[in-house]
Length: 142
Ligand SMILES: [Zn+2]
Image 1 (cartoon, protein in one colour):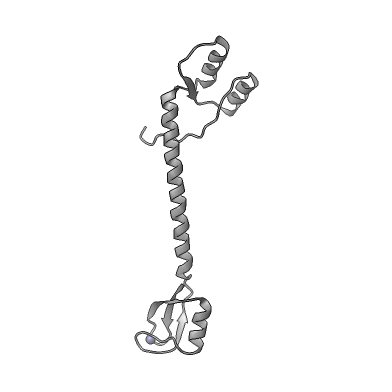
Image 2 (tube, rainbow, N blue to C red):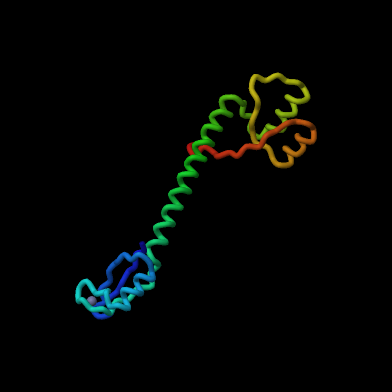
């Protein structure tokens, strides 16, 4: 189904109408089956407005996108909670802390997580220190 905004050339009134397809619209128009709702004139034209069908499918896509995004955000929250509960946050001292664990065999109950630059991560990897990179979403409320 496709929705067109039609306009009457005689009285300039416009109204919406549904058609099975754009071909059906042309067919009905040719046979003068289309008539104005107010003056009954057959001088009906399609306005240049984009058919509603397209807008409608865009809405569906957006809804799906938001749904997926919400799911991802929810997963990220779970992930963050897990990390916060099981790892110690060391902030920008990550590279330093990672090295002290590695070289001093400093025993920590928890693993650590923090902020490191790409360069720091590369250096740590070269030194044989395992790091994992995780995507992170900042808490909105702090
Ligand atoms: Zn009319």
